[in-house]
Image (cartoon, rainbow, N blue to C red):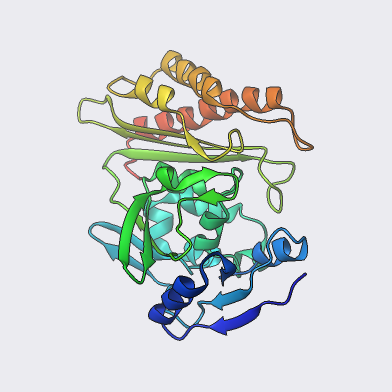
Amino acid sequence: MNHPDYIAAESIQQALHLKQVHGEDAHVVAGGTDLILRMRDEILAPELLIDLRKISLDRISKHEGGMQLGAYVQIAQLLAHPVIKETYPALAEACRQFAGPPIRNRGTLGGNIINASPAADLLPPLMAYDASLVLESISGQREMPLDQFLQGPGQTRLAPNELLTRIMLPQILANSATSFIKLGHRRSMAIAIVNVCTRISLAKDGSVEQARVVLGSVAPTVIRSQESEARLKGQLLSEDLIEDCARLAADDATPISDVRASSEYRKRMVRVLVRRALTANQSELSGGIAGA
């Protein structure tokens, strides 16, 4: 393990200047739960660590009907926040299943995103809620949808001179329901074999106005099942429709075999979990519950 220089940035401007000067040789320290392991295993060998703890990037606030989350927000903060629990319950559930209390108290939302693991717990609900990311450099800032940001395992569209500073969650349509399901060897402290998040929003006539079917740990990145989402749009939820969408989602999955599960098992579980998640959405919506 190398021994990089360390700077606790006093301002966002200082942090951005350091990224401009050092580029890929500088890595941000957020919770450090993954970065330190990668440095120990010599996967990463940064020359400079930039600590952002002194910068106000750990705030959760309302923004244009939705929510604005600082990249330094800790998982435990999200889990405890009443608006997140009420309005974005799938994200709260993913936080609940995220590792154990010590890791939740240190791990950050931004770190989980930048890590870009196909099995990341928080990425499916964030994508199901149409999250976008604010990326900043000394030249300015740009906003990018999360589903365009992820490029592959550990690969993103973050430029060498940029920092992820905020995550934007838009206002969710009324009469919506979401479900997050994680399949792992244990309930927590385990990497997902498959995780799934679905969101269904109904129009006034009861048909599906908006649908999100997001799959984790079954492709090089967390993905949306475009085929199943298109199949749902404009339709009335039914057992046959849900089964059809579950099959389409499994067809969209391109999992690998590894020590945790075979590709065949993962494909079967995508179909099972999507069916369960959409059935849960249907049950919630038919019960007149209008939670997001």
